[in-house]
Length: 458
Picture (tube, rainbow, N blue to C red):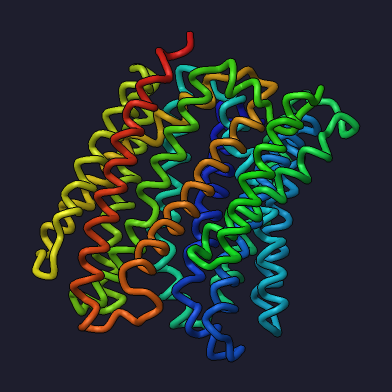
């Protein structure tokens, strides 16, 4: 019979795999989009929804499922999420139309939200505080591994067996993870209290996030501006409703009364808002300005997530011994340095300089993320682990969408609806410099948000 340690190790592997799968599913499909477009004769707008649908539905459902996990049991929600992702992976591979593929991707995003909302909560619950940073560092590293592997594996699978193989290859792994989770994850003692679930608050929250994220991703279109404003208004209404709710879907009091929780989440949001679009911007710069192929671009850009993955594992262990606030703040400061380096790029910037800048960014982000996650998860009691896990996941996803939205807005302001032709290169390079400068300023503010959280909880 397996020992408790072996059970914990198997559970860690299960959670780490799901942390790898979620970014893999959101990123690997990007490489296959041209093949999907040819098969279904899709335009660019429809094609973008194949990628966006997963990210959007994941972010919308994260907080509600985090609360449901605290009410119904994290094991139950985690296993259901794996089952949904496994079934939808099979259905995505069997899709016969773009409508079916997008619809199944939306459901797959819901499964991904169930997995992400519970994974960190499960390992935080079963591992003692002196090991928490280490395992959360491993978990964060798995996210970066998924981001690193996705473009290469997605291209390899698409070239050998077609785009459908990206989804088929995950099915047997999901079956194994579901079985292992059912056997080795112990119930967390949560009672079935569905009647306490805040349906009104959840509905308002989901509408608010949908409007805000979709609207921001389509800026500066007039309808997108209206949607974004509507989303902000709905969020304010949501906060008002939650403050007067006996069992809210999101514990607003955690932000009001728990300084570490509030400023750690704010730091995470600022960090993702200032860094996620870096790969998107540099991908355009390298291919349009430097004339590099997509394959060479991917190989250059992979330097950042690889360094992230290595540093996140080290930083997670360090956060068990040292104050996460200090580690995270140092990491954010290093990111500022990397972004400032990139703000000086030109048409003649060397590949060596770009790689060094990306390595600096990767080191800073890895040093920031694991301790910051440890800080969030260690700042709440066990009854709130699900909502804490979901909240930091929401900060990640909304920050990513805001980052892309800001990049899209700036590009539109500098070159409008035009394609990036040689005549537009000077304007585009100026836009890129300004974007990196703005991101550096955001991260500089984030350093103070990180320091403001206060000392580590006892």
